[in-house]
Image 1 (spheres, rainbow, N blue to C red):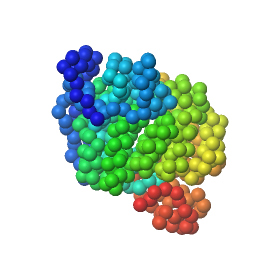
Image 2: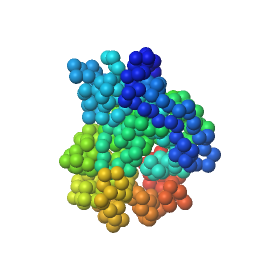
Image 3: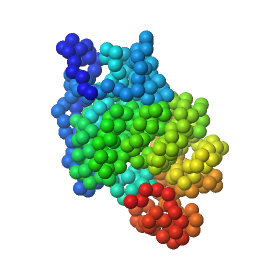
Image 4: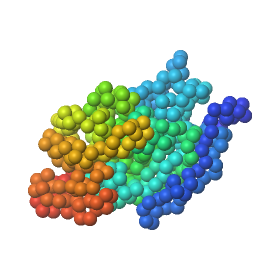
Length: 386
């Protein structure tokens, strides 16, 4: 819950914290027709550090400070002057708090295909939210301006969980997507919002790197319907150097989400000279087939040079096409190429090979899936279609 602070605490936190004002209209543009109103909130000053807080989930007190137990990073010396790696957690007294609660820095209405989710409620829209912060430190981050920031430093909107649900309904969205940064960093906000949304019949979508421990993940899965997980590579060394994380916990998280019944789609950003090794991609696809993910869509995404890898070129289309061929050859049934127009956007029937969903960007031109089956040969097509 929110915590009021004393005058002394206010002065102390004012020395090192500044909170953002609200998002301007251009940054908070709701993209879909019929979308809800734009969100405005009173400007946030230093006194609001605790206004947007709630006691954190999954932590313990240690002699060195608070230790967070949500993700494998296990930040263990969080104090009143030292944040966790995700920049959203701080201690006060003998408790750990999140300051990423009800203060998103990004709010949009997106096509569900943008997440990317190609086999989950096609043509619908998702009410998409994010706070600043992330528990990874990817050199190739495409949203680094918010993921590598703290909620105390971004321009934020006043949008508590009940308000998110209300605006989702006003916008006529079928789902809420927790996205852009990583929902693991704003776990409590995502959890509480998803719980309220479930009661209103709204679907919940997790867009994440999947870097989370089993216990908090299973709790989260109780209220989520789908997830798109970005696997960064299939190498522990690359995960450490490129992302500041580990591969094994992500693979375990994927298994847990499948056990819990979430609809899963997996993405992989192919970064030149880092993750474009075709032998590694072959091993990765082999793991997915061996672990019963052959029917889950796999998205190879094109890298654009941003953040700390501006010296690299965009991923060549030929590299993505080769990766797709390898995945199909390994036994993956639905393999897509993102950020490059062409055949890689299309859903084909794995049996009769006819076109099932014809896409152009985030638009669907034709849909030949009827009652979750191929209209031509009646092959069952995995997904959530209605």
